Image (tube, rainbow, N blue to C red; front, side, top):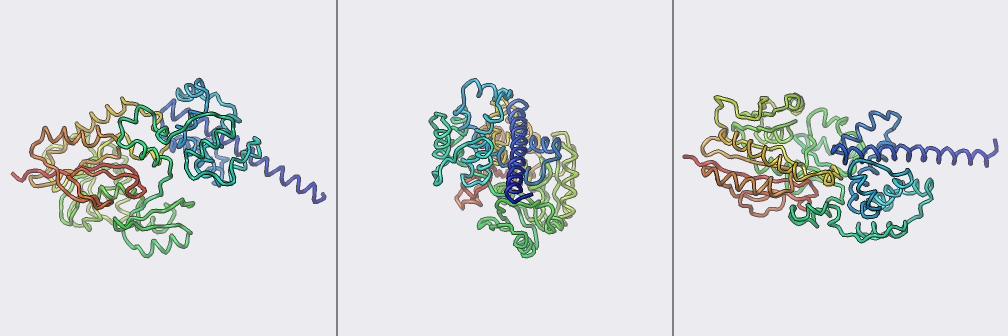
Length: 447
């Protein structure tokens, strides 16, 4: 075979591989859009479901597909304005009528908004004949989206607030700032529990870019990790845990001390439980409770790996059990809308409804009523959410305090900003490139 023919074959195979990858992307995009809008499921679970059903996807395929799908959902607020109204209505009711090329256009624009230097953009140009948008792309996300729309003959006027549904604009404080944060990928935060030097050495050997927080000891951000952190020796030995910076800030304001008796009533898999136990230096007792026994099983495994032996677990039915001894501190990290972590699960704001918010507010109110009795006189009650909504945060606390005069807000400083707080803490994306979370610290009268 001569070199010319061999080269042609090589290019053909390369193009064939790209075409196959884009076919998988089309299937994944269609499946995830149907799941987000039709089944109202988080995209990370939908992608995991897709990859389980498509075992032929290698690691590069999974990374490419995940990046494109997340970009599609991250900028859906722009993309939906670039399509005919009937298309938009059908998609947002879970019916996907796009052809491969039409969905390819949306992926192309989304990827350009997300990373205009992404080499994957050339794949779309090769297969679909899309033009290159600009050798010097605008810095602004809005301007990049507008430039992409113009060259692809799509007409629209764009503003950053459009990354949020209109009905949310009045429900979220500073919607423009929140929308801007949703357009940025957050780093992966970890909490280094022990052996900091060993962790940093391993991260460096694996080529991981790591930045330590200046505000919270042991908190570190890992940017675009391309390896499975759970495969690292440091994780296997319990040196670090994956935990967002804002979540670590909540643990910090809890103020746990060695020798105390603490209840984490909605512990889940125990991210904050492990942090509190570490702060207690294995002295005292922390009871981790939850209505999901399987989550507590996972917590016990994590505690053993971290060599934290002052944790006890207790499954419950959502109510305080009888004959309970009072606690120095009670943490209620209540079930919530999860709106504060939309940066990590883009697109969820488009399947969110006011009914979901009302349902969570009701459950939170019941949890506060049931578990506030577990706080001893002079003890501390901490309420927290990963929510953007005042109804789940300040309004919930104000209502609770009106009906429980024995509790008052406890003043302190925001660990991420250093600002003085009356007892209600808002941890925002701009405070440390983290999730949005809320905490209220209340003290019970000693009488």
